[in-house]
Amino acid sequence: MNDRAQKIKEKDLKYVAQISKTPKDIIADFGKGCTLHTIDGIEYLDFMSGVAVASTGHSHPKVVEAIYKQAQKVIHANCFGNYIYEIQTELAELLAERAPGNLQSTFFSNSGAEAMEGAIKLAVKATGRKKLIYFQRAFHGRTYMTLSISSKRLYKDPFEPLYPWAIEVPFNDIHTVRGVINDDVAAIIVEPIQGEGGIRPADPNFLPALKATAQEHGALLIVDEVQTGIARTGRWFACEHYNVVPDIMTMAKGIASGMPLGGFIASKELMSVFMEPTLIHCSTFGGNPVCCAAGVATIKVIEEEKLLDNARERGAELIAGMRSLMGKYPSMIKDVRGRGLLTAMELATSEDAADFVGKAKELGLSLSWTMNAGVNVRISPPLVITKEQVTKGLGIFETIFKKSRK
Ligand code: PLP
Image 1 (cartoon, rainbow, N blue to C red):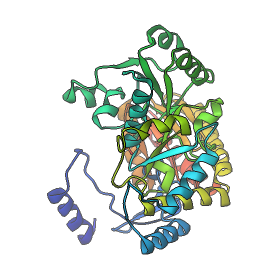
Image 2: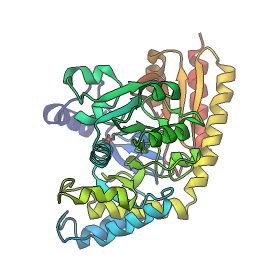
Image 3: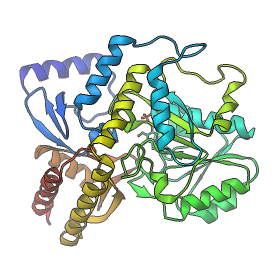
């Protein structure tokens, strides 16, 4: 670590809230496409994209230009009353054109958790009910409500009592859902591919069965696409793989290439529940025009650069490569899962996964594990990743497995 990096690290320790005992030593200086460069001159191949966020790669010139142009015009005017941001209407239109079925009306938030909060408020207000069904290993955020519908006890226990009407059931188990649902349930909340739960896709029939079960009981289906949405899995939204139109769908992470933006989309009719009383739901910064400009540019870049195809093709190469490694190192790789560029390798233990992430870092590859299932190494590179970069990453994986062979 050079002098400048050391000084930054000291300042961070002194003035920035510390939330982990893991020593911090990657000080990002600049990024381009799939690579990140640190203040002390190290280059990383980024197989994480800040957890599925830097969708168009780091500082894509068209996203940067859109941010700059909007910032020159207006950064903030007002978020309610008689104010409209033109760029927000443009983004909402692009989302409505790409979202499935009758999902046409978007409320913009600043983050994934806030999008989930709003989606739940909408479901509770629309149904007049309080019960929520969510799934084991689910992760939906860290606010009080989203903690209530996330599964990790370690993160929930210190804050109990949480929302008392949230019921946890096993993922991919429709029989249990049918056993617990009744006409008091406002919503079933599900990730189409559990992200922090270990990149665990819903079974092919699970989402359609959830939609039908919710409908039978007058409950709503909320699909959390915060991690899976905006082309990450090779479709605009992962629920498209299941031919399911949720009642409410949330999004965030990849929507604006790293600018803080989230949202939830529903039919015009359902969203109209928020008309009364005025301002029952609102956010000062949600849908900020600079973030929306980044969102519009992100969608355009995804289309111009055919990143949906790239996510499918590079994702298939990654999965094939990891499966081939699993054949060679079966005692180390227990499973390979994923869709598009949201993939994971399940290793034997959480220690193995942490060790793998550490060794990858030493070899210039940035990776992470998944929070609610630490045995999994998540591979979620920017959607602009090239074939050569996939091959390079897989080569680093093999080097690590070869050296670790017991
Ligand atoms: N939902 C899912 C599926 C997520 O993966 C996350 C974050 O990892 C969230 C919600 C919360 O998003 P945020 O961290 O932007 O609040």
